[in-house]
Amino acid sequence: MFDIQIKKLIAAERTRQKKVINLIASENYVSKDVLEALGSVLTDKYGEGYPGRRYYRGTSVVDEVELLAQERALHLFGLADKSPSIGVRGNSISSNWSVNVQPLSGSPANFAVYAALVPQGEKIMGMELTHGGHLTHGQKVSMTGKFWSSILYTVNKTTELIDYDEVKRIAIAEKPKLIVSGYTAYAHIVDFKKFREIADAADALLLVDMSHFAGLVAGGVYPSPFPYADIVTTTTHKTLRGPRSAMIFSKVDARELWKKIDKVIIPGLQGGPHFNAIAAVAVALREADTPAFKRYAAQVVSNARALADELARLGWRIVEGGTKTHLLRVDTWMNGKGMSGREAADKLEAAGIIVNENTIPFDTRKPMDPSGLRLGSAPETTRGKKEKDFREIARKIDAILRN
Image (cartoon, rainbow, N blue to C red):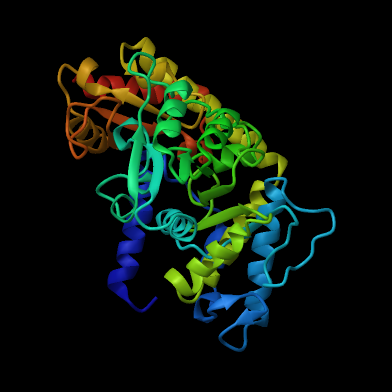
């Protein structure tokens, strides 16, 4: 590379990553093959539209790339037909589910679903941000809370778990057009069957945002939302261990949800797809469709549990009482003698452990300086760490924060 400044910064980031213990729940480390696809000549090709129906010429190769990514996505999550076929618009591979692999990231993917399926000003219902929801699940500070009327539910104050009866009561009373399940900081298993019943009772669509646990679903250690959801969105860079990108799955039925969503992606929101990213997604999907990845997913969950259990043994309060996924939240305000999450994150980063400050349910502090931390096990599991390593990490965290 002739640009010495950027070359040095890339080298500096590589060095930083190697020196730290990474517990960011929304990060991971991609393979060399994924990086190779990201840095390929596919980045040079522009091609608005869908396979076989582009507004540009010279797209025969990138059409194959996009179709391959779709086929692998459907196959990985058990949605592909035995005899795949290409639909009329060029990218419907399964008779039951469609997948759009063009969204640039998770937030625009969720926005596209709302824009396609919920009239502006109508109600969408998601979890409150401080309780574990995502900004794009209807939070007031997000455009999703400005374009649509936002109905937010919380966890139970005693258990810090989802109270499905209360969610159902709110849904029936408010009648949202769409209900969001799947979260950014909820550490337990979501009961998608109950959410299906809630959505049916409220006559609402059910969107599952599985961005955080998509890799766990692929690895068979988290229940699949597909038997119950109408739409499933996901990023590809967290537990799925792919590049920064996203996918939207939608049921193929008389409602033609996929047609509406595809029209919002292009021409509604985006221009030409990032074919280098789509190719990298395809690589990651193939890597996830292996026995080795299933072992990885199981280890991710075991490592998170070991981290949570050891921190609890050392006297730290774990939100929700523990974890059944790749992430957990630690209440530093209660156990840290008044230590905010930001202060705790700063102390840990200075010692080479990277986490993010995070709100906890019914937090009395502000989101930028909350009462807790969010920790994740996926990145360090990719690096080969096991339960004993995460117990040691817990002891390091304890020693750093108590000093």
